[in-house]
Image (tube, rainbow, N blue to C red):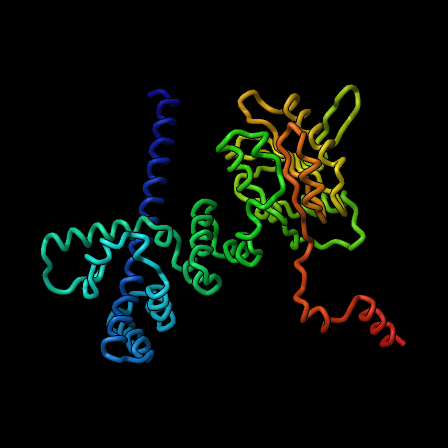
Length: 374
């Protein structure tokens, strides 16, 4: 028995087992989400038909616990979430009006009572399959609860579902992305991608970058230098990569390039696994200046010639500055032949105005401390 063939067989079997486990977990999750939707529907229907109040969920939770003690997930709180889930899930547009009309008010997807005609059962199965293919059934129940609590707009909620599936976000990461209003920042960078990249690559790059970038995970003095900012970002590289988004792989900081016997140093160099290209990030304190785009164009050309593999796609540049004049940025990029994006970055989120006036300034805090020392 040749060891290389055996090792290959072993790795192939392990891969297949892992894929099967993932599929089984996803299928089980979809089944559970469908069940929760259906239970929410049953409770809501009987509350409306029988005039039952909210206390029915407490009684149900207690009876389920007593009669099915080994089953978890049916607390009073969770049953209320199931009812809310049913009410808020706009199921009709997802599976088509014809399918919903066939469903009928007394015909649950998961739990059926009594005998049903074969044609009706086939309809139920088809509706069930279509339901389980929707994004809502492909994310964990905890994610759905978080979205119900934090996002009221259904289109925005669907966007976060799709991003969760695409990026494999945990519940904590999803919460962080919602808090930072990612849906308002994604794809908002000023860029020249439509002129320098073919479709659909230009759309992919545009949707990958955002504006502004939120770096509230670092602690730095107000009078920071660009090198200090760079050091802090690298120190917190895991959180930095999370803010950049899925697919970014860190290559290096102060990456050295030698052109005509002169050394140049890139602030940060990344490789994007999905776009298959290098991304140069240039950090700039203060306002955007037109000369930044010319320098970035030079960096991208150098990386393309000296670092990029022949199978890689052209390098992309991203200039991050504290403030950005849109008109000036668009003029600066108009005749550049390299793909460049310009975004702002924020070290901390601005406080609401009603809080700004009620909180002491740094000077006031310092004066108070001096007075106490006296």
